[in-house]
Image 1 (cartoon, rainbow, N blue to C red):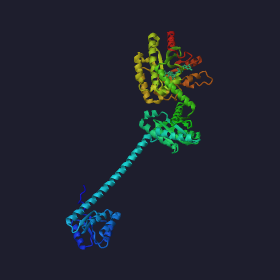
Image 2 (cartoon, protein in one colour):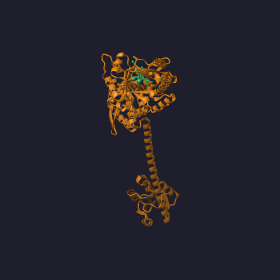
Image 3 (cartoon, helix red, strand yellow):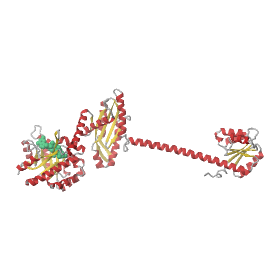
Image 4 (cartoon, protein in one colour):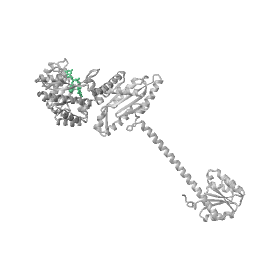
Length: 595
Ligand code: C2E
Ligand code: MG
Ligand code: MG
């Protein structure tokens, strides 16, 4: 509530009356009451005084010689600086018409002379308070309006942010998949409308990003992604779109381009810019991209199809060894379809138990005595016939199906050896090697699964050997060493398969507790060839022996190869020269014969 009297004592009052005695009386009274008073004796003076220093209220006589009170009041109402000043008429005129006229002229009150001083004081006070209240209300109103405006602006900002967030990636602030697809769809529309309009879409995947994330932490991974985002933006013009599709996958829309070469140049730029090292929190992180690109053709009906094809091309780049780019073509599509069917078939194969295990004998080379087998999976597809592991294992790895398949193999093998052990005394010392792909080897449940199968089949671990490849070791080196040590504690042996084909591995070999090196078939093949390259075998064997590992030669096909390997002191061998991979029945026959 507003205090009526609070501001009144300092209020300014202008009194207008052509009779000085009247003025004096009023002036003295009001001054005594605490008001600041000015007094004038004509209408013109009143107007001037009100304009030069607008009073808070005016007491206005009606009958005056120059301008009468009505006229003065009407004029005051016409100017903004005086329009709001409350005017109280003071007059001896008592007719109702006079009063109506006074209110029509803009007066707020009418006091009849001769007046009672208390009445004047009360009315002045009320009108000042009313004026004050009106003023406060106005101020509140303005504040309210201002606040509403601010809130509206805030809401607008929030709305904009929500809209932005829905279509952008929170980490890199790049457009997300849905905004990217929208833009590609717009570009595609132009391709359909205008002759010769073309654009290109790239899908970029960081090689080994998961490894960086796992070993250096998500924070480093995140910062790397932001750096990659900023780098990609520098490679294209502002009119193009760089987007993050998710995870470590980015996409670029180059729109438009003049020709395919322009797109290829950008692909090369991306490859160069991302095949590098980034410094993040004092750590040096090496990256390389796999890039797939596709060019807009009018035959495309939607952005989704275009992105799918760029993605297929990216997959090809990865398959061909990463750190490279591939441009989409129709064969890739066919290939992708084939892989998709293979995946479906694999799932059926697992359900319908279409997998068998064959056993390839492993011989001690000096005595040609059977010491074990390598277990090799075979898939008998119901109508496509035999499908080689070289064809379906990579698909099983990519889809994760290798985990259930690996379990099937392990269980079959353990059951088989256990059964041979009960039938043939010499089988108790046999070692059977089971292949584990890097996906299986790096599967957190591996140890548990092996324990479970051993327990279920009753096999002792010393009959089992695990064959892993160099990539399994490279990718997760610290955890790998831990796992290898655990396996060794269980009395399980480890064989490093396809040795020599992977990274130049000699330097780190001593760090891993490995029992056996298996020299890749390609090196054994060389023996007896016109362009033989034997240095590698010659150096691997003594090196392995120095590290207390034994050596298996894989793919021995000729007597010449056997003789040569014996000369080099190679411990064991397998290959068509001795046996092809055998069915369980054939392998059992061999055991009977070797009794
Ligand atoms: P790998 O482990 O290096 O197996 C050796 C491959 O060489 C086998 O091919 C075997 O049949 C073949 N081989 C053996 N001796 C000779 C020879 O004298 N000459 C020739 N030309 N080839 C010979 P396979 O059975 O086709 O297996 C191919 C690959 O598939 C294996 O290579 C292994 O990496 C993978 N694999 C096989 N079975 C399994 C499995 O149960 N699990 C996993 N994860 N991978 C498997
Ligand atoms: Mg093997
Ligand atoms: Mg091998």
